[in-house]
Amino acid sequence: MLDDFLIRATLAGVGVGLGAALLGCFVVWRRMAYFGDATAHAAILGVALSLGFSLPIPGGVLVVALVMALTITALSRRGQAMDTVLGVLAHAALAFGLMAVAFLPGARLNLESYLFGDILSVSKSDLALVWGGTVLLALWLAWRWQALLTATLNPDLAAASGIDPEREQLGLTLALALVVALSIKVVGALLITALLIIPAAAARPFARTPEAMLGLAAVVAVASALGGLRLAWVLDTPAGPSIVTCAVILFALGQIVARLRRG
Amino acid sequence: MSLLTARRLTAGFGGQQVLQGVDLSLEPGEIVTIVGPNGSGKSTLLRVLAGALKPTGGTVTRMPGLRIGYVPQKLHIDRTLPMSVMRFLNLPHRARPDAIARAMARTGVAESLAQRQMVDLSGGQFQRVLLARALLQDPHILMLDEATQGLDQPASAAFYQLIDEIRHEIGCAVLMISHELHVVMSASDRVVCLNGHICCQGTPEVVSSAPEYRALFGRGTQGALALYRHQHDHDHDEGCTHDHGHDHGHDHAHAHDHLHDDPAPRHATLHTTQGRP
Image (cartoon, rainbow over all chains, first blue to last red; front, top):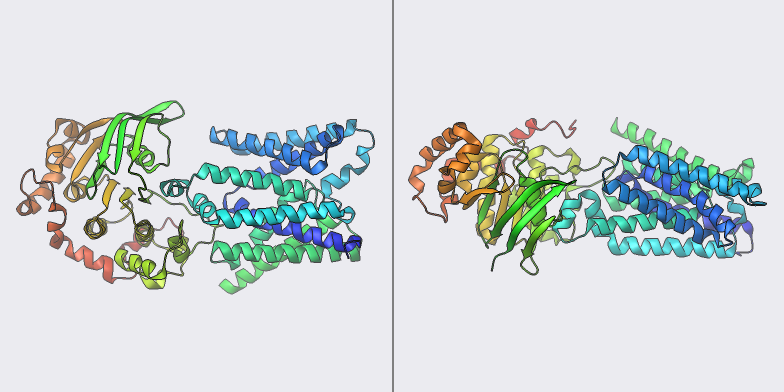
């Protein structure tokens, strides 16, 4: 069954979509969208370094994304003007990465697949990585759920109850680097943030609790992965952008329905 | 033993010292109020004692296993985070439904609010939900930072009355910040006057006559306090430090009824900043 590239692509799309949607709720609640962007852009630099040093790409991406995420966290604690810092870092990482890739013989050819993803070339080991990572993420979220929610709601409230909000934030930072590393092959560095943000945003008007929002975001992510791959097949369009397009359509429909319900 | 002891505490942000050499301890069951001008480090002190801010110097010793029910000055809930009252009351620990019902009844949160979104509550309702959540921690200490901010005077008097009743019921200590001097003075066992360091502390009677206190708050508030004292003289022995908090409850009876019987409190109209429709 896994020998069929379409089935592998579908499973990879669903796995990445689920992982990104679960974490994406926290990205939305904590207003980390630009943070996600910067971390994802750093992935290109990770790809270049991996190719240059002949390392496995997901490992290199994970390390560089993590360094970026930790750098941003450290700077934000020092009270830097964050949107400027994020803008500088995100584009610095992207520009360095693109230049570094240009030095590598042959790599220039498949640069596009790292920017926009290449879901149809997902291998069995990629698939194992995607689902392993997603399951790991889900288990961690289940374990830390109450603490993460409290820390997201208000760090002081969490601290007074003996929860270390900085530790929970560090966990989210690690999780973000992990999701970026899993997603780059499927949707590419430029569209990872879309998978984080859009399902969560689409779910928001219909959720009354954080758990409901998480569940709905997961549903939106799976539907977008399936619909997007179908769209890509029928219209012969790139798969990553097609998945994101599907998610955007679901988001827009949700906004309209929510508006109508409110009267 | 003391619930909480701070020794030679210093704290601040970005190289600027807000607190210097603060010594403070809190005994079981007492109500201690921190007063002080703006920027005197009241919130900083409370956050350090709650464990939300690391002190830059000195030590905070907590009784092992100490549970703190913390009511922050302002709790901003991002619009992107769906959070019903019921869900909020289950943070950070899932509570039993009957415990939640009790806490809601005790703090005057109407049952019908359970499924409401936190961001749709009025200021008064929101404060009471915060207090209910703090009570669900089964706290040794309730910490309240300007808990009556935005409430009108009868409502805040009723709120302090409620705190005092709860203190007697569950035997917790209360550490709070307030700038409503005339109300606070009557509701506290001990008042700590803070201005970067502790200027003076003691029973309300001692503090209100201390020159350091008068220097900070001037004659104007002194007048308000005198007026208040005048109304309540019959309850107080000079120097008596226990139980006087609840003796004058009958004076606030009108406000108290208003807190419990009215599911949509009248003072709700004061709080339009939360984006109510």
